[in-house]
Length: 217
Image (cartoon, rainbow, N blue to C red; front, side, top):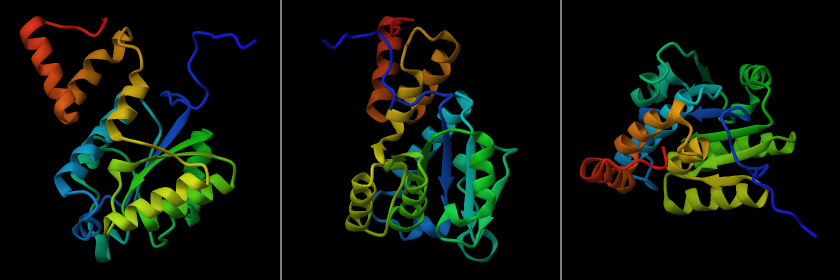
C-alpha cells in the first residue's frame, strides 16, 4: 500500500538543490529571436534573475563573443547581479568551456536550471551534455527564444525526449517560494510577482489594495 507523506517531490526545485545557468541573453542574439517578443523575454529573464538572487541560488552567467559580436548581457541580469563575473566564451555549447565545468562543480548541485538564447543551439548543447553526464536538467522555456517558433519548439521537444524538464519563469519563482508561510521570502516574492508576473501580478495588486489580502501569511 502506498502511503502519502506531507513532503515535496524529489524532482521539485528548492533554493538549495540546483544551480541556475543563464546563457547568451545578449542584444545581437535577441535581434533575431522571433519565438518570443523582446519585451516578454526581458521581463521573464528579469523574473528568473530576481528569483535566483532572492533565494540565493548559485548562478552562472555567460555570454558568447561579447566584445566582438553579440554585445553585453541584458541589464535585467547585470543589474540583479552587479558583482557577478560573466564568463565570455567562444564555444556555442556552454558546456564545452572548462570554466563552466569549474563553476558547476564548485556549486555542487545535481540539478541545473537553464535559460538562454537560442534554444536550438545554446540551450540544446549544454542541456543534452549535462543530461549525458548524469545531471538533472530543467529549462525555463519562456526565458529562452529562437529564430522561429519551429526552432524553439523542436529544440524543447528534443531536450524533453532526453529527460529535460520544462518550466516557466513564474513557475520557477513560485516553486522556490512554495509555501506562503515562509515569511523571510514572502515580501520579495510578492514584489517580484507584481513587477514581472503579468496578470498574476495584477491580481496581487488588486487583492492587496482592495482587501489587504495575504496568501496565508
